[in-house]
Structures are given as C-alpha cells and as structure tokens.
Amino acid sequence: MTTQSKPSVLVTGGAGYIGSHAVLALKDAGWPVAVIDNLTTGFRFAIPEGVPLYEGDIADADLLARIFAEQQTVAIMHFAGSIIVPESVADPLKYYHNNTAKSRALIAAAIEAGIAHVIFSSTAATYGIPEVAAVNEDTPQRPINPYGWSKLMTEQMLADVAAAHPMNYGVLRYFNVAGADPQARSGQSTAGATHLIKVAIEAALGKRESVSVFGTDYATPDGTGVRDYIHVSDLAAAHVLTLEALIAQPGRSLTMNCGYGRGFSVNEVLDAVDRVTNRQLDRRIEGRRAGDPDSLISDPAHLKATLGWEPRHADLDTIIAHALAWERKLTDLRGAA
Image (cartoon, rainbow, N blue to C red; front, side, top):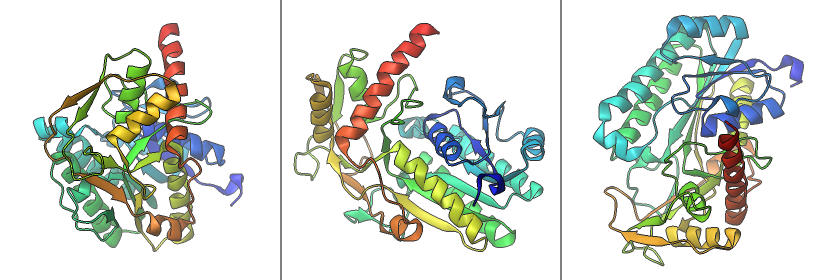
C-alpha cells in the first residue's frame, strides 16, 4: 500500500502515553493521521508537528462528524479512557462513563459515518486473576474491578456492532506497557503515574523518595509479583499491523494479547533500574494490594502468527533506558514551560 493510497486514521486519546506512540508509528509508516483528545490527561506537546489535534470529547457526536468529514476518516484507533485500577474501585461510575458509555457514543458516531475499521485499546485486566501461567485469548475473562469490566463491555459492544454493521474491529489486550519512544519523541508523562518502571525511574532521579513493593509473599521465585512488560513502541507497531490486517480482510475481526510471553518480578525490575541508572533505589515493603495476581504473563503466539509481529525492544534494560531518557527530557520540557 503506497502512502498516497493509505486512508486517514483518527486516534482518540492521541495526546496520551500509548496513543501518542501509535500516532508516531502511523506517521512514520506514512499514514494520514489526526487526533482527538480532551487533554485531561494528555499533553499537547505529545502531538507531532503536522498532525491535526481536535481538542474535545469522544462523546461529542457533532465534533466527531466534523472530524470524519474533514479528515475523510476510514479507521479509528481508540485509546481515550481512564486507566487507574484502584480509582475504578473507588469511583466505578466514572469508569463506566468514560470507558463504556463514551465508547458507545464513539462507536455510534463511527457507524453513522460509515467508518469501516476500529482498533480498541483493551487490557489483560479483562482476565482478572487467571488460573494459567501464560494467558491466551481463550483464557476465561473474569474481571475483578470496574476498570476491567468497563473494557470488557466495550469489547462486547464491538463484537455485537460488527455482527450488525459493515465494520470490523481489532481488540488488543495489553499486558504491562512500559518504556518510551527510542528517539525520545514521547513517553509516559503523567504526573503521579502508578506504572512501576515510571515510578522507579522517578525515584532514581530524585523525583520520589522511594519505591513501594506491594507484597513479598506471592507464589513466585522471589515473593514479589511477576508481570509481562511490553515496550510501548512494539505495542504501537502491533496497532499498525492490526490496521493493515483489518483493511486487507474487511470481513475479519481480530482479538489478540500484547506481551512478550516473559515475566519479571517487581524485585527484578527494580534491580534492572538500579543497574541502568547506577543508583540504589530505596525500596519500601508494603502489604499486598487487593486483587493483584501472583503472576500475569501473556501468550503472544496468536499475535505473532496472525500479524507476523516480532518485537524490536524485548529487553528489560532497553525498556528502562528508553524510559530514563524520556524522563530526563520531560524534566527539561517542564523546566522550559
């Protein structure tokens, strides 16, 4: 597919962490791309030069209709939403509103405009606490928090809508997303972020006093929870491949796990941050958080077989080094603001 023949893609939440990397991946591959973001948690500086930014809400049907017409949108990558699990427990209606009701509004506007393809940012949280070591797409989905349920409801909506209308979809269930663009064009910028690698790097740079380790009595080799960390740029590449697959086969929809199939414990991650930064983190041992599984690891076989996806940054030290470079740049950006 030549650059001239590539259709326009609208990225919702494209000023946020993962969405901005998808924008970069699309732009690098020659796709016409536009962004809608209300900038509640996103950042204007995350939008590359030349990419139209529509500041507004994904539930604004009139705005969406205008964007679709102006951009001649053919596909949507949907990242907009709320993502903090403990907050979803404390304020479930916020999550059902932002993640489910607004996704319904977006899908309705897409159908009204004849949008043919939707790629949805879902999560391994839809599996809850799985009973298997490596989670594949057939593992039962039993969310244990409103965040997971809000995402699973949107997955179901997409399946039902695709059965009733000429639209196909890609659902990508993320495991633990980490790192930053290798060229330091974007990264995790949210203040007070809860991602372990982000928190640890902030502590290494003196932005936090310590790093909390929540639980040391899990059924894992060192007692701390094990997670599958995927580099955000590898994840963004999977979105572009999914888009190409949906366009190539309009009658087929796809659901795929996004991870590396390898897990690292909290202590292993913190050891790697110590190693990459050449500093010793202050680790504070705290009690377990409710609902945290011992281990959560992806089986990415379906993603690889379906799309031919192969990760380029599947190395923990590389992920941390890219996140570190971004954190240093972010300090400069905020200092200049």
